[in-house]
Image 1 (tube, rainbow, N blue to C red):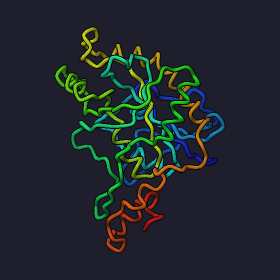
Image 2 (cartoon, helix red, strand yellow):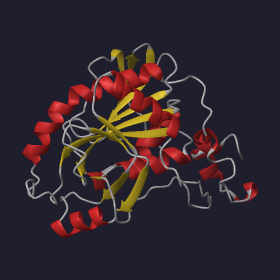
Image 3 (cartoon, rainbow, N blue to C red):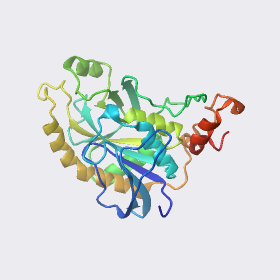
Image 4 (cartoon, one colour):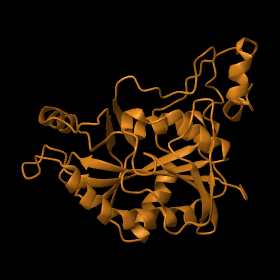
Length: 287
Protein backbone atom coordinates (compact mmCIF):
# COMPACT_ATOMS: atom_id res chain seq x y z
CA UNK A 1 0.00 0.00 0.00
CA UNK A 2 1.30 3.45 -0.87
CA UNK A 3 0.49 6.57 1.11
CA UNK A 4 -1.24 7.12 4.43
CA UNK A 5 -4.76 5.75 4.80
CA UNK A 6 -6.63 7.61 7.56
CA UNK A 7 -10.18 7.29 6.27
CA UNK A 8 -12.25 4.13 6.07
CA UNK A 9 -15.52 3.78 4.17
CA UNK A 10 -17.87 0.88 4.80
CA UNK A 11 -20.46 0.45 2.09
CA UNK A 12 -23.66 -1.37 2.92
CA UNK A 13 -26.50 -2.78 0.85
CA UNK A 14 -26.44 -1.15 -2.59
CA UNK A 15 -23.10 0.59 -2.06
CA UNK A 16 -20.48 -1.91 -3.15
CA UNK A 17 -18.01 0.52 -4.71
CA UNK A 18 -16.98 4.20 -4.84
CA UNK A 19 -17.05 5.44 -8.41
CA UNK A 20 -14.68 8.37 -7.77
CA UNK A 21 -11.97 6.19 -6.26
CA UNK A 22 -8.75 6.35 -8.33
CA UNK A 23 -5.27 4.79 -8.09
CA UNK A 24 -6.86 1.65 -6.72
CA UNK A 25 -5.14 -1.33 -5.20
CA UNK A 26 -6.60 -4.27 -3.30
CA UNK A 27 -5.24 -5.17 0.11
CA UNK A 28 -6.14 -8.53 1.63
CA UNK A 29 -5.61 -8.58 5.39
CA UNK A 30 -5.69 -11.49 7.81
CA UNK A 31 -6.52 -10.45 11.37
CA UNK A 32 -6.40 -12.28 14.72
CA UNK A 33 -10.17 -12.56 14.30
CA UNK A 34 -10.19 -14.04 10.81
CA UNK A 35 -10.88 -12.62 7.37
CA UNK A 36 -12.75 -9.36 6.69
CA UNK A 37 -15.76 -9.40 4.37
CA UNK A 38 -13.61 -8.67 1.32
CA UNK A 39 -10.20 -7.29 0.39
CA UNK A 40 -9.99 -3.57 1.16
CA UNK A 41 -9.89 -1.31 -1.87
CA UNK A 42 -7.28 1.37 -1.23
CA UNK A 43 -7.45 4.45 -3.41
CA UNK A 44 -7.56 8.21 -3.68
CA UNK A 45 -10.80 10.11 -3.10
CA UNK A 46 -10.84 13.92 -3.27
CA UNK A 47 -7.11 13.98 -2.68
CA UNK A 48 -7.16 11.65 0.35
CA UNK A 49 -6.09 8.03 0.62
CA UNK A 50 -9.03 5.94 1.78
CA UNK A 51 -9.84 2.29 2.39
CA UNK A 52 -13.19 1.04 1.10
CA UNK A 53 -14.83 -2.16 2.32
CA UNK A 54 -18.03 -3.72 0.97
CA UNK A 55 -19.65 -4.76 4.26
CA UNK A 56 -21.50 -7.75 2.83
CA UNK A 57 -18.75 -8.77 0.42
CA UNK A 58 -18.72 -8.61 -3.37
CA UNK A 59 -22.04 -9.86 -4.67
CA UNK A 60 -23.62 -9.41 -1.20
CA UNK A 61 -22.64 -12.81 0.20
CA UNK A 62 -22.91 -12.32 3.97
CA UNK A 63 -26.02 -11.69 6.04
CA UNK A 64 -25.83 -9.22 8.96
CA UNK A 65 -25.54 -12.07 11.47
CA UNK A 66 -22.68 -13.69 9.53
CA UNK A 67 -20.47 -10.62 9.26
CA UNK A 68 -17.07 -10.74 10.91
CA UNK A 69 -17.35 -7.29 12.48
CA UNK A 70 -14.13 -7.65 14.46
CA UNK A 71 -12.06 -8.53 11.41
CA UNK A 72 -13.60 -5.69 9.40
CA UNK A 73 -12.77 -3.02 11.97
CA UNK A 74 -9.42 -4.48 13.05
CA UNK A 75 -8.31 -4.55 9.42
CA UNK A 76 -9.11 -0.87 9.05
CA UNK A 77 -7.18 -0.13 12.25
CA UNK A 78 -4.08 -1.89 10.90
CA UNK A 79 -4.32 0.24 7.76
CA UNK A 80 -4.00 3.36 9.91
CA UNK A 81 -7.66 4.42 9.68
CA UNK A 82 -8.77 7.10 12.14
CA UNK A 83 -12.20 7.92 10.67
CA UNK A 84 -14.92 5.52 9.51
CA UNK A 85 -17.88 6.71 7.44
CA UNK A 86 -20.41 3.90 7.33
CA UNK A 87 -23.23 3.89 4.77
CA UNK A 88 -26.18 1.68 5.64
CA UNK A 89 -29.69 0.96 4.38
CA UNK A 90 -32.38 1.45 7.05
CA UNK A 91 -36.12 1.37 7.52
CA UNK A 92 -37.97 4.44 8.81
CA UNK A 93 -39.93 4.25 12.06
CA UNK A 94 -41.25 7.81 11.86
CA UNK A 95 -43.26 9.61 9.19
CA UNK A 96 -40.71 12.38 8.80
CA UNK A 97 -37.96 10.05 7.58
CA UNK A 98 -39.12 9.56 4.01
CA UNK A 99 -37.62 6.89 1.74
CA UNK A 100 -34.53 8.31 0.00
CA UNK A 101 -33.88 10.72 2.88
CA UNK A 102 -30.59 10.41 4.79
CA UNK A 103 -30.28 10.20 8.58
CA UNK A 104 -27.18 10.67 10.73
CA UNK A 105 -28.19 8.98 14.00
CA UNK A 106 -26.47 9.78 17.29
CA UNK A 107 -27.74 6.82 19.34
CA UNK A 108 -28.14 3.05 19.00
CA UNK A 109 -30.43 0.52 20.65
CA UNK A 110 -29.40 -3.13 20.63
CA UNK A 111 -31.87 -5.84 19.66
CA UNK A 112 -29.29 -8.33 18.39
CA UNK A 113 -28.68 -11.75 19.92
CA UNK A 114 -25.21 -12.88 20.92
CA UNK A 115 -23.07 -11.12 18.35
CA UNK A 116 -19.46 -10.63 19.39
CA UNK A 117 -18.87 -6.90 19.57
CA UNK A 118 -15.63 -6.50 21.53
CA UNK A 119 -11.97 -7.13 20.86
CA UNK A 120 -11.39 -7.86 24.53
CA UNK A 121 -11.61 -10.97 26.68
CA UNK A 122 -9.24 -13.95 26.79
CA UNK A 123 -7.48 -12.49 29.84
CA UNK A 124 -7.68 -8.80 28.93
CA UNK A 125 -10.63 -6.73 30.16
CA UNK A 126 -11.52 -3.21 28.99
CA UNK A 127 -14.66 -1.10 29.37
CA UNK A 128 -14.91 1.87 26.99
CA UNK A 129 -17.38 4.70 27.49
CA UNK A 130 -20.24 4.40 25.01
CA UNK A 131 -22.90 6.87 26.18
CA UNK A 132 -22.39 8.78 22.94
CA UNK A 133 -21.67 6.05 20.38
CA UNK A 134 -21.25 8.33 17.36
CA UNK A 135 -18.42 10.83 16.97
CA UNK A 136 -20.21 14.17 17.03
CA UNK A 137 -17.46 15.95 15.09
CA UNK A 138 -17.57 13.34 12.34
CA UNK A 139 -21.36 13.61 12.39
CA UNK A 140 -21.01 17.36 11.84
CA UNK A 141 -18.85 16.72 8.80
CA UNK A 142 -21.33 14.18 7.39
CA UNK A 143 -24.26 16.56 7.94
CA UNK A 144 -22.44 19.42 6.20
CA UNK A 145 -21.58 17.09 3.30
CA UNK A 146 -25.25 16.12 2.91
CA UNK A 147 -26.26 19.77 2.77
CA UNK A 148 -23.51 20.57 0.27
CA UNK A 149 -24.77 18.01 -2.25
CA UNK A 150 -28.43 18.90 -1.74
CA UNK A 151 -29.50 15.71 0.02
CA UNK A 152 -32.37 15.81 2.51
CA UNK A 153 -30.73 14.97 5.82
CA UNK A 154 -31.93 14.53 9.41
CA UNK A 155 -29.38 14.91 12.19
CA UNK A 156 -29.75 12.82 15.35
CA UNK A 157 -32.10 10.04 16.34
CA UNK A 158 -31.84 6.43 17.47
CA UNK A 159 -30.95 3.50 15.22
CA UNK A 160 -32.48 0.21 16.40
CA UNK A 161 -30.10 -2.61 15.48
CA UNK A 162 -32.14 -5.79 15.00
CA UNK A 163 -30.86 -9.29 14.36
CA UNK A 164 -32.55 -10.10 11.07
CA UNK A 165 -32.25 -11.33 8.41
CA UNK A 166 -36.06 -11.24 8.45
CA UNK A 167 -37.69 -7.83 8.56
CA UNK A 168 -39.74 -6.75 11.60
CA UNK A 169 -43.09 -8.12 12.57
CA UNK A 170 -45.86 -5.53 12.79
CA UNK A 171 -45.89 -5.88 16.59
CA UNK A 172 -42.14 -5.20 16.77
CA UNK A 173 -42.36 -2.24 14.43
CA UNK A 174 -45.17 -0.66 16.47
CA UNK A 175 -43.26 -1.27 19.71
CA UNK A 176 -40.12 0.46 18.44
CA UNK A 177 -42.23 3.43 17.36
CA UNK A 178 -43.86 3.60 20.79
CA UNK A 179 -40.38 3.73 22.33
CA UNK A 180 -39.53 6.73 20.18
CA UNK A 181 -37.01 4.93 18.00
CA UNK A 182 -36.26 6.56 14.64
CA UNK A 183 -34.74 4.13 12.15
CA UNK A 184 -34.03 0.40 12.05
CA UNK A 185 -31.18 -1.59 10.54
CA UNK A 186 -29.16 -4.76 11.09
CA UNK A 187 -25.46 -3.87 11.14
CA UNK A 188 -24.15 -0.58 12.49
CA UNK A 189 -24.15 -1.04 16.27
CA UNK A 190 -21.40 -3.66 16.31
CA UNK A 191 -19.28 -1.50 14.03
CA UNK A 192 -19.72 1.50 16.33
CA UNK A 193 -18.75 -0.48 19.44
CA UNK A 194 -15.65 -1.93 17.83
CA UNK A 195 -14.62 1.39 16.30
CA UNK A 196 -14.76 2.97 19.75
CA UNK A 197 -12.56 0.22 21.19
CA UNK A 198 -10.16 0.75 18.29
CA UNK A 199 -10.13 4.52 18.98
CA UNK A 200 -11.56 5.24 15.52
CA UNK A 201 -14.11 8.03 14.98
CA UNK A 202 -17.33 6.51 13.62
CA UNK A 203 -20.49 7.92 12.05
CA UNK A 204 -23.38 6.34 10.16
CA UNK A 205 -24.92 7.79 7.02
CA UNK A 206 -28.23 5.94 7.02
CA UNK A 207 -30.08 5.65 3.71
CA UNK A 208 -33.83 5.32 4.24
CA UNK A 209 -35.27 2.69 1.90
CA UNK A 210 -38.73 2.00 3.34
CA UNK A 211 -41.20 2.65 6.18
CA UNK A 212 -40.63 -0.73 7.80
CA UNK A 213 -44.08 -2.37 8.14
CA UNK A 214 -45.85 -0.02 10.60
CA UNK A 215 -47.01 2.45 7.94
CA UNK A 216 -50.58 1.72 6.75
CA UNK A 217 -49.59 2.40 3.15
CA UNK A 218 -46.34 0.41 3.36
CA UNK A 219 -47.24 -2.65 5.38
CA UNK A 220 -45.22 -5.11 3.33
CA UNK A 221 -41.49 -4.42 3.04
CA UNK A 222 -40.01 -6.25 0.06
CA UNK A 223 -36.49 -6.57 -1.25
CA UNK A 224 -37.65 -5.16 -4.61
CA UNK A 225 -38.92 -2.00 -2.91
CA UNK A 226 -35.68 -1.61 -0.99
CA UNK A 227 -33.48 -2.20 -4.04
CA UNK A 228 -35.34 0.49 -6.03
CA UNK A 229 -34.69 3.04 -3.30
CA UNK A 230 -31.13 1.86 -2.81
CA UNK A 231 -30.37 2.48 -6.47
CA UNK A 232 -31.92 5.93 -6.22
CA UNK A 233 -29.90 6.65 -3.08
CA UNK A 234 -26.58 5.26 -4.30
CA UNK A 235 -25.57 8.35 -6.25
CA UNK A 236 -26.42 10.63 -3.31
CA UNK A 237 -24.50 8.43 -0.90
CA UNK A 238 -21.37 8.44 -3.04
CA UNK A 239 -21.50 12.23 -3.40
CA UNK A 240 -22.02 12.71 0.34
CA UNK A 241 -19.13 10.43 1.28
CA UNK A 242 -16.78 12.06 -1.22
CA UNK A 243 -17.75 15.51 0.06
CA UNK A 244 -17.27 14.39 3.66
CA UNK A 245 -13.83 12.99 2.90
CA UNK A 246 -12.81 16.36 1.45
CA UNK A 247 -13.98 18.14 4.63
CA UNK A 248 -12.39 15.91 7.28
CA UNK A 249 -9.96 17.73 9.58
CA UNK A 250 -6.46 16.34 9.83
CA UNK A 251 -6.17 16.69 13.58
CA UNK A 252 -8.57 14.81 15.84
CA UNK A 253 -9.60 16.64 19.02
CA UNK A 254 -12.44 14.32 20.05
CA UNK A 255 -12.42 11.75 22.85
CA UNK A 256 -12.62 8.86 20.34
CA UNK A 257 -8.86 9.13 19.84
CA UNK A 258 -8.16 8.19 23.47
CA UNK A 259 -11.12 5.92 24.26
CA UNK A 260 -8.90 3.19 25.73
CA UNK A 261 -6.80 5.50 27.91
CA UNK A 262 -8.75 4.73 31.09
CA UNK A 263 -10.64 1.66 29.85
CA UNK A 264 -8.16 -1.19 30.34
CA UNK A 265 -8.79 -2.76 33.75
CA UNK A 266 -6.43 -5.75 33.64
CA UNK A 267 -3.05 -5.22 35.31
CA UNK A 268 -0.41 -5.09 32.55
CA UNK A 269 1.66 -7.95 33.98
CA UNK A 270 -1.44 -10.17 33.95
CA UNK A 271 -2.19 -9.73 30.23
CA UNK A 272 -1.43 -12.97 28.33
CA UNK A 273 1.49 -12.51 25.96
CA UNK A 274 -0.39 -13.78 22.92
CA UNK A 275 -3.29 -11.40 23.50
CA UNK A 276 -0.87 -8.51 24.05
CA UNK A 277 0.81 -9.25 20.70
CA UNK A 278 -2.44 -9.73 18.77
CA UNK A 279 -4.00 -6.52 20.07
CA UNK A 280 -0.83 -4.41 19.80
CA UNK A 281 -2.40 -2.11 17.16
CA UNK A 282 -5.07 -1.24 19.75
CA UNK A 283 -3.32 -1.37 23.10
CA UNK A 284 0.37 -0.95 22.29
CA UNK A 285 0.57 2.67 23.44
CA UNK A 286 -1.01 1.85 26.82
CA UNK A 287 0.54 -1.42 28.00
